[in-house]
Length: 633
Image 1: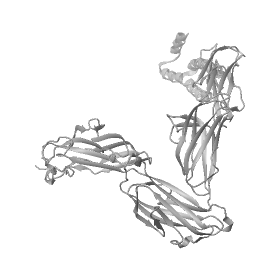
Image 2: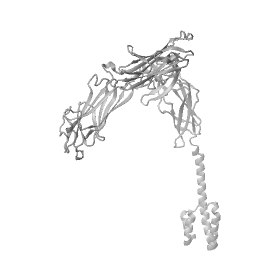
Image 3: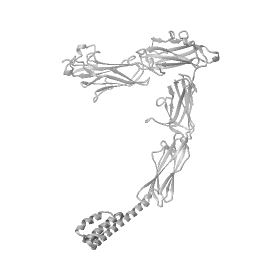
Image 4: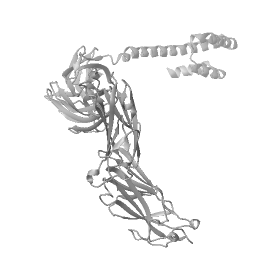
């Protein structure tokens, strides 16, 4: 048929009409172009006459027939795809039955309905359920952690039928928390090869957590009082809570001293393990409270799940408890350099302020204040007191009406302050291992000689105590040697241009009162100095980073008393130098600045000590003199 049409077309058209034919075959003609097409026909009619016009009209009619048929086919196909394939995925629905609020850890059954809403059978039906993290799935009398995706193979569901899947599960969470459950149904209609899905989700609200925390702590605390706090944790659940932890949050000014049992992480996290239903446990802590009179201190405890690797905490239950610092009728307070929390450095000048106040509604007369200083690092010979005296036998500083006129009578709500200064020793006294972790303890006591009639029977005396930790003193020495050296050196001395001379670098560390952890010493070699990989002691963890030219000694822990009660920690290593012409007459650098770093375990701070660069000026080598120190030709 197509061949005949092509032959007819060749007979109808002249050679000069072939270009027009090609253009017309490529063009799609819409109704709005009919007017232009009519014009073309008119022109063709005028040029070629009625016979030729009839030939062109027949050709155009045939072309329109083909175009119309194709358009109708396309419309019908689109309608089919829209009405049939466009409804695919609606043959099934998945429903999670709604549940009311639950108790955390309660065993519940999640019911999921998979329904065929189509007129054909659904094959290869598969249900995927995503449960909240930390859930437990019960099966055959055992409970196991829920997988990330729980997959159930259902098989086939006939038209109009449904399948019910029930999952026994325990869901854990905090009170008021919502936990989402997701369900995804995959299936394949039997008359199609494609797979489709239906999804839904449901949020379950936790309205109760069967865990309890009870604080046993005084409602009123005294300033600087060492307080014991008992925390009781309980479970009223029917089943155990596994992998439970306790976390405590302390108020500002609380100084933790001990815990029983000891915390697992820091001073605030305890591992409890499995908490059985109907059981209870206890954690006891001790600490000191510092704060303003009348200040409220809030403590908080939480039971939950803790990940030791990521440090992520998920709370199930939290309870807070508050205590108040008592307001004493006659108060006294100590400050060091304007603060109540300070770490003292050996050799530091200490400036103390003693504040007092009458908090009653009556005048108080003949007030006296006594301050006692304790600490081996204190140098009493440097004591400078304002308006007070030193009672040498008791080593106490005293302010009384005889030396301070303002203490004869203090009006209601009034107060004042006294100051004194004292120096600490450059080197702490270390006579035995008992001199480890030293402190300076300052205690102040205030009292009145005669209480007003209205306050008879009221305790007017009060005390304040502060204890300040002392940083460990670290002595870090670096020196360069040649003749008097633990390693054998060679080469000309004074160093000579073009010749190699060997030197020994010695690092020496002494540590007084506190253990130093993670200690290491680093220094960089100049480009013209060579590392000889010769050192002593041989078991020392010392190495050279060739890319940086950095010598690194990984010391580790340096015990308190090292170099004082026991020998100093030392390392000697060998380097070499070949001087150049431009260094003639100069003392050449053998090692750049040395840096000792570590962590003071007692005060909880990082420490750093530095030493100046070492040169060929061998001042620590008594076997040399100035004539041996500078480069010669």
